[in-house]
Each structure stands twice: as C-alpha cells, then as structure tokens.
Image (cartoon, rainbow, N blue to C red; front, top):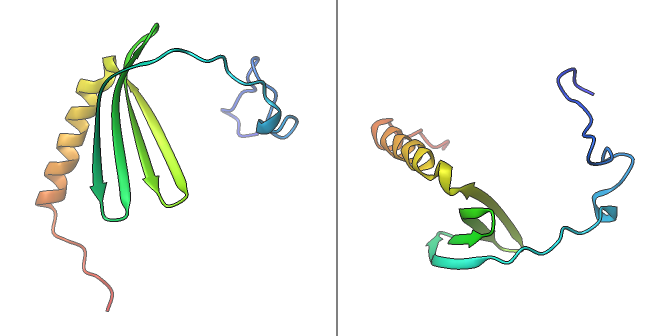
Length: 102
C-alpha cells in the first residue's frame, strides 16, 4: 500500500473481495433532460444531461468498438469543466503540431 492510501471503511480491499462479488448498487431513477451525440473518427461520444433526486449532472459516454467508458460531472462543476475545456482548445490551436515519425 502506498503511504497516502488508506483502506476504505465502506468496502473490502479489491485483493480480498473481487469487484464481481460486491453487492449491486440500488437503482436510482434518472430523468434525461437533453441528449446529444458526436461522432469523431471511430468513436462516438454521447452527452446526456440528466437529473435524479441528488441533482443535475452531465454524463459523457465514450463508445469505441466493444469498449464503453463514461464520466459524470455534477452540475456544480460544469462551468469549471467548460473553462478547462476552453483552455485546452486554445492551447491545441496555439501549439505547433507534433511532427509525425516517418
């Protein structure tokens, strides 16, 4: 264990209890407020603005082949997420492109 890692009081360490043996999480009703989809090369990104009893959030799903990943951003963090994304877009357009190996 790394010195700054602490065992969780809520869950067994993965080496002692594999993920497939964890009890399922209870279902939470979610309402979809808006959805959009974006195709970039071989990947599809699905943006879902949702709401549940805990509040609003943005779920971003990346689908590529057989693999699907997602992140959830609470509505309280959307402005900061947008600000950071704007900074990344600006840096991408200002930095010279990396030379491809020949």
